[in-house]
Length: 405
Image (cartoon, rainbow, N blue to C red):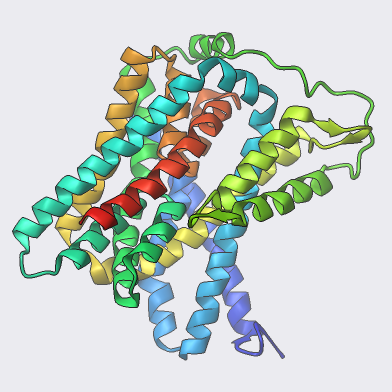
């Protein structure tokens, strides 16, 4: 008896599930290690997943047939995408009640900040392409561009940019090059933003209670989703959650000139709308608060597991120090550009600033970390406002760079 069409044995599936839980347990333990008040948190799961991908997952695949390797990759992709839907939809529901009021009040700020982050990363990427061409003139320019645009998508942990770049390069060989670049930069792309949102409040010696007060004051209250005596489809709200995810996946699949919101963007927007209105007629559309918190954390963990294991499998083989340096630059420079622009030009308070940056960097792990250290779910509203702008901008910048170079 077997699963996955008779390819993976029960023992193999059991070991896969055993590995996932082992990574979660060790990753959370690593994330709790604190150095000068800074910890990795849930990103510890990502690091352990990468190590597992490097030292266990790839050697195991070496002994499998191509069909079995393909099913293993598909299993990881299912884990990753399921996690992404759970996390993003939870964020949408949580942010929904305040989202539209906040967006109406600060619309220009969110658009400008999202553009500053993505355009600065695009400029850094273009500079790295020119530098790499000078250092390695024997490598074809299209291959260099494919590698650096892949690094850009990894530095911003942007799956839509990754997919758009693979589609734009136009050949299977260059698609593999894009994948390598994405995998190389993804590690720092996750960890860099996670550490940034933890370190900045400590550098500034921010009083979190005061910052939470400023955040609430800066937002425009919206009680359109106030609770009433509505019909509960189920006691946990899973039905409403599944309905939002279902519609979101459909919306995200709609393409216009090869540009789409993707599953992530579609689920986020639909969940925001559900969270904003809260009900349709007498039917409640809001899952319970504890349900959303559990789904958010579980989704983040599953996403990091799937992305980490797959990324670790190709990390060592294709790694070059200079590529890692490029990735660091494409993550770090936009972070500081966005932070200083938000602070000194847009005059956003610290938590609004950092929440917007996690959206501008399209970093779901960093948002999870920021919610933890801020002690409030309200930062998710800023993430949700900036994220769609960044999502569209990074896809366009990636395609533009490939077109130019």
